[in-house]
Length: 122
Image (cartoon, rainbow, N blue to C red; front, side, top):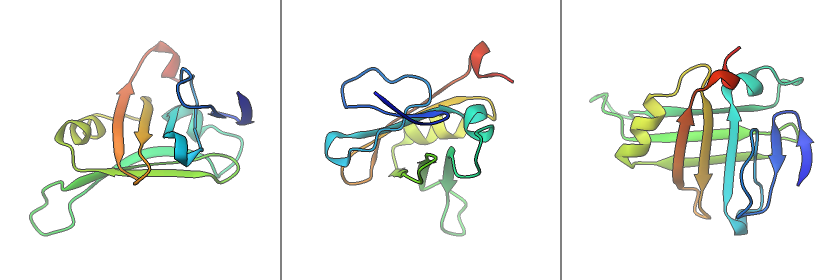
């Protein structure tokens, strides 16, 4: 494992994700994980992680969610999903949650997980 930035790490597929992991080898599967707080408190203004909900028409119905992360080197990982379960997970994300999302080679989210614990709080 190579440390590349505060809050983010590069790892090979199949290795256990640790806090702040951002995988970048597209052909091996991708994942990003960090607490919202650690990304927000990073030493630079480049790193972030988060998800958004999108309702692109006047019905205001959520059509898809998008998750996005960037590490200190500017490596970006982004995915979209229309899966109702993943959309519900995105809707539950709070300011101090830990977020992990996985991406396939086509840029689709294959997993979105979030949780909060004593070590993700300020």
